[in-house]
Length: 217
Ligand code: B16
Ligand code: MG
Image (cartoon, rainbow, N blue to C red; front, side):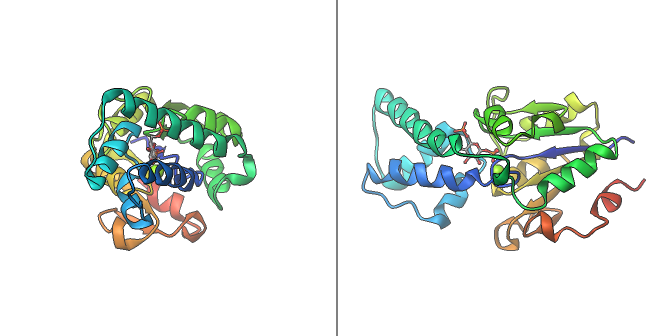
């Protein structure tokens, strides 16, 4: 059976997770709320709109739709200012080598991201050419932990979900991969990604034969 590889973007391929954090921290400060890194874990992989809903919940604030739209727009403007400065040097360690190896071995590759900025970011870091398909916040109606993003990815790669391997840094994303019946590789810490099939701190911690292990019949 043909294996398929699906990579999350923010926090897996590039460290835009940190840029999201900085921009949401400023948005939360509008309500006098301090967004800590610990709470921010719960925003990872979550859509822009759901992220602001969560922050408003934590801050105990309620606002008009107009204000809601203005805050998400401003957050994205600030976020894109950080993204503008990105180059291929911002690809996280070990990622280029691993994804290239998957490509050279002939396995199909998808991006599975909640971000509406995914295509622009991949272009900035010059990685678009490695992906056979891109599923992102512009194609998906149900946010992670719903498996939709990864199921669309599998179908576009023409692979069975159970033959797909998902690389994810977020709690919601690992849950989405598991719900899709895929193998989940958590990138980060066991502390919050213990529900993943395997967890590695980052791509440089992969065993040399990980690709072989994951794809042997
Ligand atoms: P945007 P991923 C997610 O991307 C981020 O982890 C999450 O923090 C962000 O809110 C979401 O994308 C939406 O991003 O505002 O750019 O549309 O991790 O699924 O690649
Ligand atoms: Mg992520």
